Image (cartoon, rainbow, N blue to C red):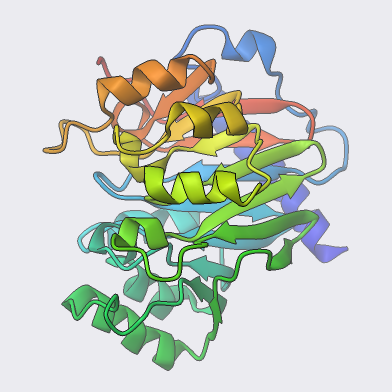
Length: 303
């Protein structure tokens, strides 16, 4: 199948570049000794998760079998960084763009991505009129969706779609009229063989509790931590339900919010053994064959 062949070619190229530049090492001791890299000599599908460093914003790219899903694209001003990254990964038209919620640090870069790449589908939360913002970044995003011709999908809990061999399930938002737009974030679960990723957007403790009450399938190998590592997200009950082995925090270096908060890091360290942060590591890549994981990052900054 063409998608599979493209994925193998991408994997071989990526491993070669990573070895050349010394990316395949861990900023936290022990990862390379406990989670081994997939064997590139075996012709099988792999899934990669890319946390793209867009400062104090979110941008996550999931690739599997030549299929692509971009979740958010940071704020206005980071477009070139996202576009350059997509080009480096050989991404053409995106299969899915997910706008987790209409805050500019998540959707500000999406108009440029849509204009340059297009997308087959755009997934976003269904907002009430009272919730719908009138910001310039949101208007620009909606205008570009119309121009792109992408199919708009409302995030409905329980909806499932395929990304190559991976399966993506919409878990939230469950609340339909949350007071905070953060709690209207699209929450996704990605399953690939025995591996799984939970993408929490900017969800805070109120929506976390709703997911727990709904008995949502939260347990996952990797957690993209909610709200840039805010102490108002990732409660003990939520983390216990997820029980991640690896956590990824997307936040800006020396940001004004103090993210990630120390309270969150203390809670998170009780569950996740390996914690990666874009403020320390720059771009982060996690790769799995569905069983084993490898981690690569751009650089290591001192805390």
